[in-house]
Length: 430
Image 1 (tube, one colour):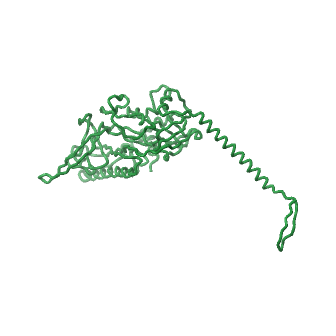
Image 2: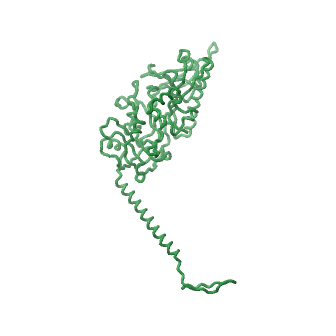
C-alpha cells in the first residue's frame, strides 16, 4: 500500500492504493541483460585476441621471407613483424638509366674580347639513383585494397651507393657495368590493406597480419615485366622461380580482427628521387633539331648543353644529361623522349617546393620547344607524359593526364592487357 497526500485547490487530498511500476521492473531487467551481454562480448573479444596473439608467430624481418619461401611458414598464418611502412618502392626505368649522372659544380661567367660570354663549369659525376613509384589501390570482389611496402627496420633512405667489389654482381648489377647496392633494407615486403594507411606511412611500425599470396590478376599487373634490377628489389615478396611459394604479402584484409598496426617511431629524413617521363609527338629528328633543342632547356647554359658519363669517366653512355641552372635534371637518349627528375626529402617541409619546381621545369621546357617548332617549322607538336612517380598527380602535371598520345591510344585499344593496366594506374587520379 502506498499513501500519498496532495495539497492545492483541486487536490483530492490523501489517496492510497496498490502501486506496481512494471516499466521500472522491465528497464531493470533489460539493463541487466544488456550489461551481461556486453560483458560476454567484451570477454569473448579479449579471449579471441588472446587466442590470436598466442597463435601469432613473432618473427624478425630477415626471417619472414626466408622462412616463407623455404616453406617454414604457410599461407594464412598470423605473424607479427617490425619494419618501416611506405607507399613508395624503387623502380628501374632502363631506357634512361646511366651508371652515372652529373652534378654541376662551380659555374664561372667571364666576358671575352668580342663581348660574348663564355662559361666555365665544373661537372662531377655521381652514381645514378633509382627513382621511386607508388601503385594505386585495386578492387577485388567490389572491395578496395591498398598497396603498401614494409621495409627492413634498418631502412633510412631510398638513395643508395655504389656497391663494393665484393658485392655479388648477380644480385646488384643494373646496366653498363654500374653496380648499385640494393641491400636488404631496400627490398620490401608488400602489405595489402582494406583501408588507407597514410597515417602510418613514413613510420617504423609493428604489424600483425596474415600471410597471403598475390591474386593472379595483381601478379600480372605488378610483375608482368620484371627485369633483373626489379627482380632484386622485389626478391622479398616475389620469387618467380620458386617451385612452390612464389609470392608473399602481409594481408590485413582477410580477417581484420586478427590484424593490428602500432606506430613506434617516425622517420626524420627520407631522401628519394622523383621521376617523370615525357615525349614530343611529331617532333623533327633532323640534325638542326638535335643541335638546337639543348638551348631550349630551362635556364640553359650557353654553348655546352649535354653531357654523358660512362664507366670510369668515359663518355660512352647512351644517356645524355642536360646542363642547366636548375635543381631538377633532364636526360634523353634521342632528343624526343625525356626523363625529368629531382632529389627530395619526402618528410621535409620543402617537399612541395621541390615537386612544384619539377613540374614548372617540365612545363617551361615544353613551352620552349613548342614555341620553337611553331616559329621555326610552323609545326604544332604535342607534349605527352608517359610515366609519373605517383599517378594520383597526373593531372597536376598535364591537363590530359598520362599516356594521351594518339599512337599509344591505338596500341591500348588493340591490347586488352595494356588497357586494363592503364585503367588501373589511372584509377586514382586527382
